[in-house]
Image (tube, rainbow, N blue to C red):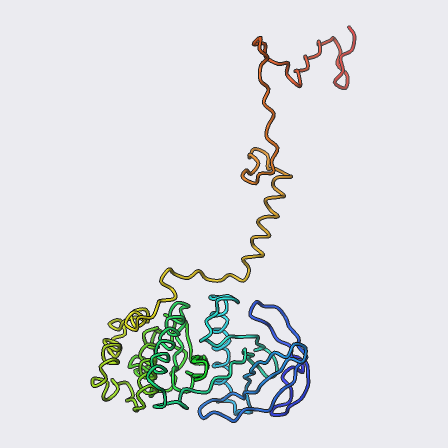
Length: 360
């Protein structure tokens, strides 16, 4: 890593070098802000970064001063977050990335002080608005939250730690934003670690196992209940009093089943909310190398047209080939004279030297 990370806790102007989501090396002239106040339970230092060239802002997460045991855990969490955010970036591409999900701008995991660079989205934690949302806001919050779970499900990502802290809500814009993917995993692979136990589904609470998107659905339902109704939740159990909430009772049917296979998917909850499923027609995975591959294939086709392989017909369908000349017989029916008549074999002589007949 370049002097990129700066001095811990100090504001200043330096150069920041990192790798962007498409694998390119980038260097920016930036100004570092001071560290944010520490968040209980989080081992990372977080600060704002401003690009001095174009004024864009980012958030940098990096390892703080930790003992060996805690540093190992923090490095594992940072590596997990980088890997999962790169998965999201490559799934949705630069233009279709859901606004509800954290978006990676760059990373440097091999430097002296590993870090992750995120696009800045100023959203306070949903914990700040627990029990304060009006009826329309409650509905907007639930729709946005389960739409986000659907985005994750489609990308094959399990967040693993949806809480009123990692789920954020911007009231003026009614924008939901999910951060903190350091406990995430890809669907089906072993869970890396347990997130905040209070919001976790029974499966993760029992111990190791495969990551299941329906565990995110459990946690999201707990967060939705706590934030919109204002009541506390119970660890690994159905929230107390949910049966008296007619709207939520219908919405959460089956969500709190102990067996994740018996829970509905995020698309079903969107249907219950009369919210369109963004992936009803499926979703094609973004390929960052697709444009390069198309250029390579086009160049290869041009080369094949210039240098056809012996025994194979030239490729067709390009519209640039010269049509073959067709010789039609004249009205009298006499076939045309061949363009290249056969050369008669020379008469053999008594002597033959260097392929030439000698007179006999």
